Image: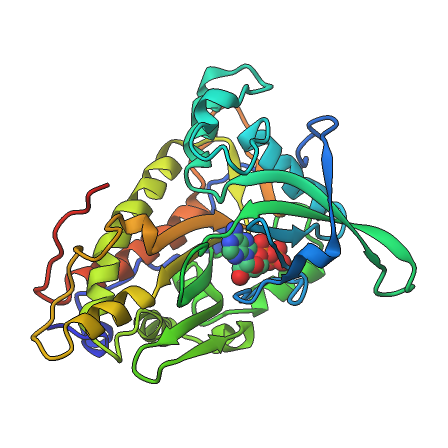
Length: 369
Ligand SMILES: Nc1ncnc2c1ncn2[C@@H]1O[C@H](COP(=O)(O)OP(=O)(O)O)[C@@H](O)[C@H]1O
Ligand SMILES: [Mg+2]
């Protein structure tokens, strides 16, 4: 069985090195998205919300909320970033479904551009994002002035909705994490962060939490922790996140299940020519309860991970989505190339999970999905 330490020492395991991060192919526009017109803003009551318990990263560390109907409410960032992110969501989703409309985006989203290729590309992209339920506002106190004010939020589906022991990691993708509007000071600041992983493999671990099956408690790592990582400790941390210390077969099992999803996103990036995804993250979540429950059931037996536990679709306990689009820029030019900045990080992440998935001989049977 190849454990994570062996992966680090294995000479054949070489992640693609970026070398020159300025060689990004993404011919981005100097413009931000045009506003997509008026949209409805729903009003929520503050008392129906609470802080999102499993928030692990983000500028607004204390600001992401969970609504009792299930929405994750991400506060709009300072302008122009807030409007850029809202416009991105409207561009991808077109119109906004109600929370109970779960599966029918494809049939309910007219695209304003009227371009078939863009429409198809955005329909594909919807599958990799959390569902978007529009912009909502809450009447609250302004933190600085103490005066009553409206705070605006982007309402999203919670990646780990329904999970009993949620484990979440936020991984920023790409060696370039600034957009064309960034000042030289901002560029210098971005370059100086996550230096051990961002430039070498195009990945930054912004934060994570996981339920440790051995210690039976939840551990949280914040962004300061991610900034200390180098490639080998980044891989160790992913292994730890996947509860490898509790049972080395779990990272293998989860990686095997996660890879097809990551490879779908990889396929999307081979063809998409709409956006340059700067400073955007992949949020990966799994429910550690699944493994705890299996272990309890087979406590005195020689247990082996399998798919035969209750709801056996992978998405009932393992999910991934793209988040954080305040720095996404429209791609421009007559013949734009792919977003090589994002591809660089994503390809390396896939390589890490591929190694984890082939690191033991335990293979899981296919899902019923
Ligand atoms: N759809 C979601 N489901 C669950 N958690 C989310 C979701 N979107 C954001 N979060 C949580 O909020 C954090 C910050 O979100 P993000 O969009 O990255 O904000 P920021 O722009 O402040 O970085 C994420 O790291 C994650 O913990
Ligand atoms: Mg973020």
